[in-house]
Length: 225
Image (cartoon, rainbow, N blue to C red):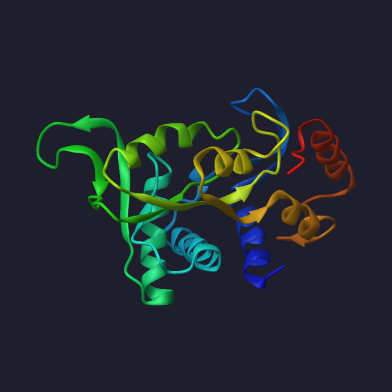
């Protein structure tokens, strides 16, 4: 595992973004872990987060894209932080774009924030985590309605590696349904491998008890692909 991925895992724990306990997801599943990107709240955290995303996007998709699209609401700060980092790290100016939940009819009108899209633009979508793939059902038609847009792929921070609506992971389902590549900074398998019996901030994050509960969760909800 690359060093930046190991650092990112520790960063999620230290920022209290990745937590272990008892959580009920939107899907109704009872999960022993939970990731909340809304817990990144400081300038230093967002700057680091942008760099981790930029590195992962660069590794996965290279530089041949024009716009980073962050779906409202959490995707808005993610896209802004990442395009700043992309410029600093790779000298590539990427435009950011996000959608509004409500269309604005005065001033800066329309459904989009940030850059407009035009025919031929190549877009990477940035999100926090994909559990069911529902958000892309809203995002995809918004992007496609802007013209002849090529969606290069989607990057999330954490792939939970669990079933979507089939036996496959939500990210795999998105890729197959919409025809573009998907990736994550880290997968939950990376997280478990790295954190099991490892101290972060003076405590073992995934001990034997938590590991047993995670294993049981994946017995029921783990994706085959």
